[in-house]
Amino acid sequence: MSLEIGGLVFANQNLAKNHVRSILKSIGDGGYIDKTNPFFNFFLDLVMRHPKHEEKIGKGVNRFLVYSDWANENCFGFDIERIDLTKENISFNQCVTGHNKSEKNVVIGVFRHVINDDIVGFKNLNFKPGMQCPLCGCILNKKFDAHVDHILPFKDILASFLKKEPNTPKVFDIDPSTKQKCFRMEDAFYAVNWIYYHRSLATYRILCSTCNVSRRID
Image (cartoon, rainbow, N blue to C red; front, side, top):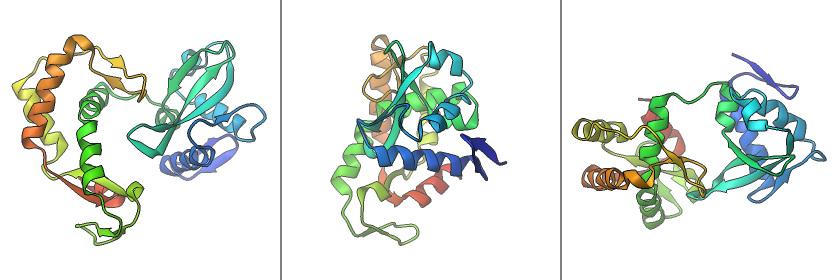
């Protein structure tokens, strides 16, 4: 289904998301989009698609602040800086889709967040420029092109843990460094149990982004 954002028409949501990513990447970490920037109105229209746009915008938008993901410097997002200089994080994926994340996806994101150091550590230790994706054989020259895949699918590890530990926390904090939802300090014992359970079952390999995404869909 096609969609229009800021006067541009996209054939589907993935193309719209890729366009947003390309703009953010061109501006770079620590950059901003203010009213003098030609992309300002596009991003303002993008934000208006968010299901909680009134809450996100508040008294009005001063500018958009671009940042890179702490775990992957080639992945970017943005915060809203309001006219009263308060800041609000916003997901451009939710802006494009116009939908809030489901409760299930929020919980999965929290469980992924807490093991991210293990994932990043494996990638840093094992990625070598010129290595091949074991599934399709393509050459991975840049770390950005390489994704860490669970050989035993993450969803299966998580499902078995939730059967063992069914009392999943329902309330989460926001990690100020990653802008992602995370376990609260009072749930640290539960989070640590998950980390060690995951480590006991998880084995990894490095794939290209295309193969990794197809594995998640499967």
